[in-house]
Length: 462
Image (cartoon, rainbow, N blue to C red):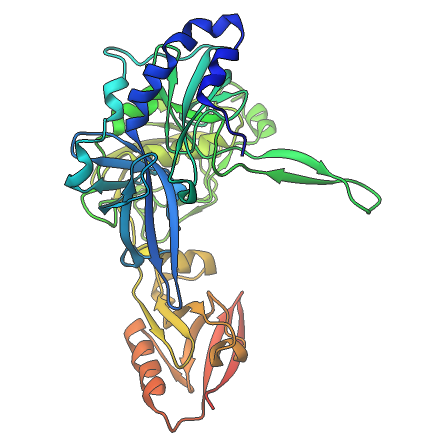
């Protein structure tokens, strides 16, 4: 990590000398909106501690953390013992996890009342009117926090804006790292201009004993040079989840969207138009009910043409965000190109089917694996109809356990146990529970589906 000391501002070129005189005062005030959040993920065999940075957004001690702060495979009930740490303070205070917002991607946490008076909401440093958009080459600075073994000591980072791009949210990219992911970025006057996003990877060539250099990508997970502009974050600070699952979640069901190929756009005389091709319309989805079909090209949402974004693939994220910003029951008008005809459709968004993190699970210690409920996403991955789904899925397999030695792998689809078809998750767990508690049993057999092929696994218990 490259550390930038606070007083290095005194060494800056004359173009930023005016900021240097005020920076210590601005720094002392604004560091109070930055915190570290620690929590424990309790898995089948261990407890894993994770630390992320967060920004305080209101007087109730509500904190937002980046989308990558929590493993999407972790169930919410596995996330425990949340603590909030003030910069430079080694003593954490218990906090509450509120859930994740699908639109912004933020995870929300609420600090305990004990430390709320010591926190300053980042909104205190926002512009009174429209949020300022930094110009190219403008000086910006932000907050970083050291690791836990250094008591989360705050430090200053500073840079200049090199590029502003829609990804699809308006995002600035600085010449070098300007803040820890999830922490705020300010202009020379201390006005909030953005929130640091996950760091971008940089490509390098690695030279070794081989005949040619190998490309590698290095990512600084503790610091970031990219930040989402304030105008893209401030309007959505109120999207505090109603529950830890983040529901309600809007769902369209247009799967595998791909940006319209430029040559195809040229052939269709749509060079000035952005579009997204639908690879598959999901079974029973709002998109299917609205009449959307495979290979339709989406051109507009609610009568508004899709924006031309670079790179082209960003348009897919734009559509996904437009869906997630809405709620189940909302109507979304779709303008699509089908063959040579333009077709107008209206989809009533539904509730997102149960997600992987919400699936029921049960761990069988003697057998050495966790079985989980088969969810809608599993059917998509395996290209099967929901009506044809049965059994359960292996979620976790303990190394060197009976199941692991037998060759069971995570994501194996368990369809039969000891020759008996298990049609539901309940039936599967009941059968596995019977095996688990039959101490006289020396083995049992699993029939699983893996990558479209069937495997029979003999699990020896003794």
